[in-house]
Image 1: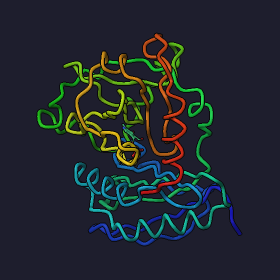
Image 2 (image 1 turned 60 degrees about the vertical axis):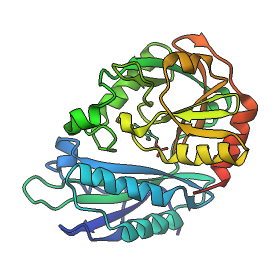
Image 3 (image 1 turned 180 degrees about the horizontal axis):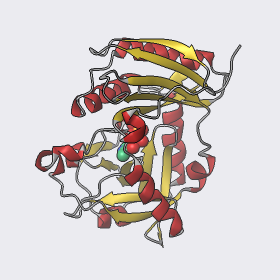
Length: 290
Ligand SMILES: Cc1ncc(COP(=O)(O)O)c(C=O)c1O
């Protein structure tokens, strides 16, 4: 019987090998002394699922492996996780769009045994952000562009469970009448959103900032750049300033689940929403899964 949400719990060996079994999502499963709970110590992925197809799954699993390596967690068993995602999606009642979360924590303190699961839910409703666009504040992340080499322990570029800073930035934006955030570095480089990648278009040139600045290597922006190339435009990874964003013909926040949301104001200044490009980009992101 299809249900919602759907949970598959992992049994993870110290070398990362994993086996999964369905479990009741309404029952308690995580202990109060799990380091994922007490320290936010773990990594995750959020995979968009459209028409029953997990999008960019290989890219997500590669990033899951990188985040695990950066946090000294065992290399995830990619085939087992992929299989669990497919089984959990198949067990979920059919919806046009779903979200699959893959979670690994460092486990119960003192055991050295990671905790893990896959949870598939209907996800949030992004219709308004997609069609009307989002108001964005530019906020200082106060890290330099070489943060990943200068201070690798800050784990910039890893998708860790420590998202309290990201949600704090979003609350700050909402308290100031905006929907979302674009972070800048202490050197003035445009970085990313708290849960999105920045993409800008100026005429036929689409640009996203380099992950080397300490950004999450976005899966959605990879597919968005493929869209730009497919329409004969230039797709580039390059540094951007806030002035570049203000002058661009179109600016988007892109991420799994939400896919693409045009930015309709930056720091309270209205900017054009490229409705035609948004419609075409969103169509691509909904129909091309890799
Ligand atoms: C900090 C950060 N940057 C970028 C992204 C976008 O990544 P993706 O397109 O793979 O969802 C996310 C996704 O949640 C994120 O948390």
